[in-house]
Amino acid sequence: MTASTVLLGDGLAVSPLGFGGMALTPVYGEVDPAEALKTLHHAVDAGVSFIDTADIYGGGSNEELIAQLLKERRDEVQLATKFGLVGTPADGYTDIRNDAAYIRQAVDRSLQRLGTDVIDLYYMHRRDLRVPIVETVEALAELAQQGKVRHLGLSEVTAQELEEATAVHPIAAVQSEWSIWSRDVERNVVPAAAALGVGFVPYSPLGRGFLTGTVDAANLGSNDFRRRIPRFAPDAASSNQAVVSAVQSVAGELGATPAQVALAWLLAQGKRLGLPVVPIPGTRKRHRIDENLGALALELSPPQLEVLGAASDAVVGSRSADPNWVSQGRE
Image (cartoon, rainbow, N blue to C red):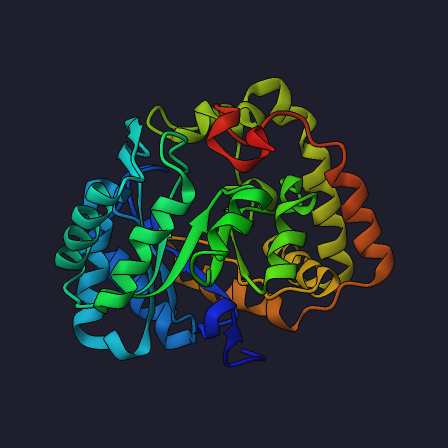
């Protein structure tokens, strides 16, 4: 690893790549818990100490899995989890809640499942439009004062929502989808985060696997939630192979893998746009963690960045089944 830590907002130091825990739940197919725990240990062994989960991943089972890692290695991990969604990724969501009463219940449930007394970074997972964001952040600030969380985060907020939130309490990070094929956050949210001193944590930095060229959208499993995402529909996925081809072409020039190119592109964007960027790719396979870390040493040339940028402009299909679900639909 070329850098030991990256500073997000509010003084939160994390590893330069994180690990997205949702991959270790049955959203892309069945998971072996013993193998999943080995994958988590391998991540920390390799220097990936920023571990991301949420209370709804696996109906809470992902937090319980990570608790087994924390039991042995709590002081080696920067732990992030989230509240706000009701339901599960595999079965669908039934509600979003950001009210103070729900937040107080949610944090205690997460702390219990995780087997820890403090969460390093606690995110609002999605925006509940029935509750002013100022009230949500005030409730989160109380948790920080109580010592239950160390830093606050927001997921899929608009620039205006981020500005309103930071007026109440420092925000360490925004987590939203951002990758070569999901660049809408660059219009407003990323510049706002840069101006406010907030770090950015891109989820699905490999396009939910699509950018690696290993995903056949026509043959996704019956319980694979990507079936509900418009850009994975047959016609859109066929058109979007063009961006995969561009990534593969650049990878070939560099003797790298498509995943490394996709991650290196995000890191380059962070430098260009002036804010700390820490992607959180998820995987079930230990060797993919080592592969992803290779992105930290990869330098993309201006012509290569131009090729990738042009390919991203041609992506077809929304990144979410519900436009209001993500910041793009509310801007």
